[in-house]
Image 1 (cartoon, rainbow, N blue to C red):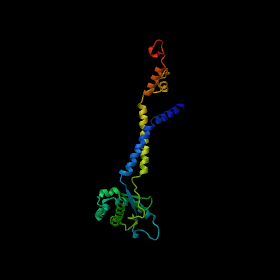
Image 2: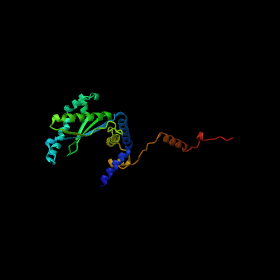
Image 3: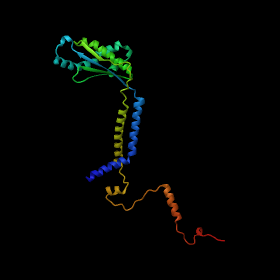
Image 4: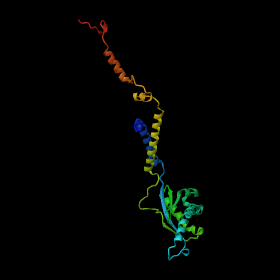
Length: 259
């Protein structure tokens, strides 16, 4: 138990000794993260729509709930999610909406499709540096998907539950960069790096600095210790030694003549 306490004391001693270095690394990293998030990283906005796809009324029973049919629709959601991100949909979006002025590959990077477990609802999300552009793109993809999916699958009942608002009453804020998250990550990572550097420097430092170090590592008692004296302290000590120098009989500099 005593050895563990000693180890903990050593850790605290190292951290306290290198505290200025650790604090400097953390402060610099947080400042850089803040500057990058606020002034360098371009803001990214997000717009989304929700789409539901059902089998046609002729294929399902309207009078009673067909659980097998619902389960089939839910399983097909994963297929629909992949279809939206294929050229079969995106190429038509690029062709029908040339004002977007982007390629299919660039559009694919902006699109993300997700679904809640055990539901037939898909959420289509588009991210862009402009919210207005993101809203226009996500609405266009939803419309093209609704138009093209009947020819790809034998389904007619495709509904867009909600579209992205082009002019919302409250301007949405950017989803990226997340300044607080970036600062938190920078703080944690820089703190770990600072602690690692502090312990590395302490590990590489093999000099003996105190009496305790000599007794701990060499097992020898300390007979005497020479302290380091500063330049000002040295001058003061020398002047004090000169003033306190004993006078000897016959020294002319100590003889005064009287009239």
